[in-house]
Image 1 (spheres, rainbow, N blue to C red):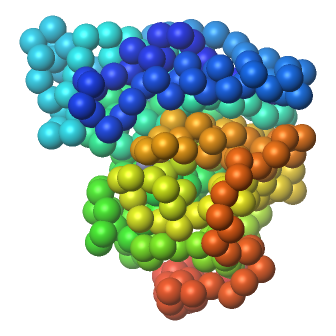
Image 2 (cartoon, protein in one colour; image 1 turned 60 degrees about the vertical axis):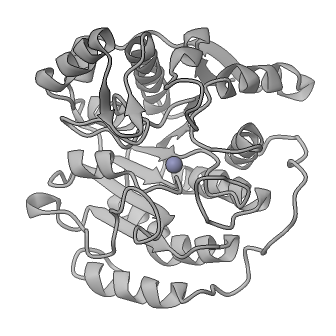
Length: 343
Ligand SMILES: [Zn+2]
C-alpha cells in the first residue's frame, strides 16, 4: 500500500475565515478517500508526526523560526497575505513532519504522498501562505544522507522559497513549470534564473503563458524535463503542487483540464520508474471549487488508480502541438541550459 500522510490537525493550518486558503480541504479530501471503496487497499492513511526544531533548522534560520513563534503570540504577518494565527505554526510543523516521513518511505524505493507543499517559505522569510518549507526540508533531509533529489514543482505559482534555498546547490535539481511570473505572484521564475556558482544549471524555470493547456505542458516536459531528469539521475523525485494549474482555479489563469492534472501525476511516476528513483507526491494548493478533485486526478495519474477521472471539459489532448509561443520559450531555455545538459 502507498503511505499517505495526514493528521486532523492539518486543518489548523489556517489564516482566518476570509483568507483564500481554506483548510477544510484536508478533512474533505480525507472523507473523499474514505468514500471510495476501490481505494481502500491502495492508500494507507498514516498519521503525520510533528517535525522537530532540528528538522526545521535544516533549511530555516533559528532567528526566523523564533520569529514565527513569537508572532503566533503577538499577532502579525510574515507578509501581506500570510498572517500567523494561533495553532498554525504547529500545524505547519505537522505538515513538514508528514513530508519528511513520506520522503523516508520513498527513499526505500517506493512512493508516498503527503498533503504538503509550502514552497514559498525561504530560509529566513515566510510568504504566499507558507510558514515553513516542507518541500525543501524533505529534500534537504535526503541530501544530508548523500542522496540526489529532484524537486519537480508543478504548482501554478513558482516555488521561489525552494528555489532560493537550493540556488547554489547542485545536489538538488529544482524544476518548475508555472504561470508566467509577469502575470502572477511571486514574480520569480524567469528562464534566465538557472542557479548560481556550483548550482548553475540546477535550477530550471519554465514559465507558461496564461491559458496554457495540457499540450503545452507535455511539450515542455518532453523537451526539457524528461531529458534533464534522466541525465541528473535522482535518487528521489518530489513532485510538488496541487490543483491551481486547473482552469477553474480562482487565483490563477492556467488552462489545465482534469486530464492535464492526471498527466502531471503520470509523467512524474514515469520519470521515477525510468530512473529508478523514489517518488513523493505533495499536494496542498488550489483555490476555488475543484481543489480536492484536482488532487485526486493527480493521484490517479501517479498511481494508475482504477477510478473515474472527475468529469470535466476537455480543453486539449496531450499530443497536440504547443501553442501560445511555448515552443519559443522552450528554445530559449535550451539555449540557456545546453552547456549544462545534453538537450
Ligand atoms: Zn500555488
